[in-house]
Image 1: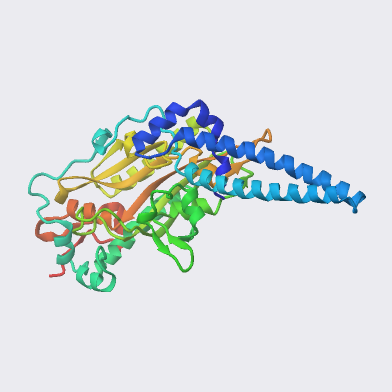
Image 2 (image 1 turned 135 degrees about the vertical axis):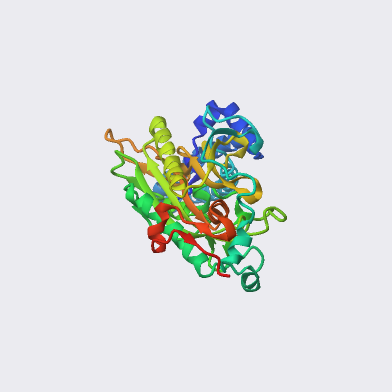
Length: 427
C-alpha cells in the first residue's frame, strides 16, 4: 500500500499543462519539472545500480574460481562500495520522490466548473420549499434546550471546546436519523462494512487525506495511529494491495462510524451550536468500480440520488452544487455538494459531499481488479455521505419546528421513534 511508484509519470509528462492547472486551482505547491527530473535521475541510478550488481555477481563467480587472486578480491571490494553508495543515494532520492509525488493532485474532469472559491461553484437545482418569514423563530440550540436534548456546558467541561452531549430525545432522535439512513442504503443492496476508525498513516495517504490534512486529524502518537474523519478511509484501506477477482459490476459498500476532525484553522467560524464539532457520526457510501468513465459518472449520480432521497423523505429543503476546481480536494476529479437549508443561518449549509476520485485513491492504495482479458488495471473509487449528525439536526429541528417549539416528525422517520408524530418541549 502507498507505493508511489504507481504514480503514472508517463501521464504526467503528456498532460503536464493539465497537472499544472490542477496544482494552481487546488492551491498546491509542487515543481513538476523538478519532480520529473528527479524521477528520471532515480531511473538512471536504478539502472546504474543494476549494472554494478551484475558486475558484483560476475566478480563473485571469478573469485570463487580463483580465491588467491588479490586483484579480483580488491575489485570486489571496490564494487561493493559502489553498490552501497548507489543504494544509499537511491534510497534518499526515492524518499524525496515519494514525498513530492504524494502532493501530485488528481486531474479535475473537463466538465468541472473552473474557479478558485465556493462563490464559483455552480448551483444545479433546489428541492423543497423554504419556510416563510417568521415560521422558524428559534434556532436549533434554543429548540434543543427547550426539549432537554443537549448539554453543551457539561460536554465542554468533560472534553473541551466544540464538544457536545445529546440527552434524552436528542440522543434518540440522532440515532433514529442514523438508523433511518443506514436502512435506506442497506435496502439498496450495499454491503455493510464496520471498518477501523483508527488507521495507520498509509491508509490516510492512500485515500488522499495526507498530505495537507494532517492538522485536521487526531494523531495517537504512542500507537502510530490516526482517528479517521470518515468511514471511507477504513473501508477503502482494507482493500489495499488487493486485486479484486470479480468486478464485473460496481462493488457498493457503506459503513456507519464515529468520526473525528480537529477543525484546525476554523476558529471563530461556526463555533456556536452543532455545526462544526470535533466528534460526529456518519453513514458513508463507497463505490469501487471498473475503470470506466461513463460507469463512474452513473455511479456518482446514484450516490447523490441516494442522499437526496433521504433528505426528501426527511422533508428537508436542499440544493445541489457542482463544485469548482478550487473547491476540490487533492484527489477529487469531480464533487457535488448537497447543502440543506438552515433557517438560523439564512443559508444552505453543507451536509453531504459526493466525490468521484477516478483511479487516484486506487493507485495510492494499489487497488486493482482483474479483467477478463487478463489485465490488472487500477479501479475507480467514489463516495458520498448518506447522512451525518449532529449537523443534520440543525436543519431538522429548525425546519420542522412548530408553534410553541414542538418538532414535527416526518412520516418516513416515525417508525424509528415509536410512531410519534411530533416532539413536545420538555417544559
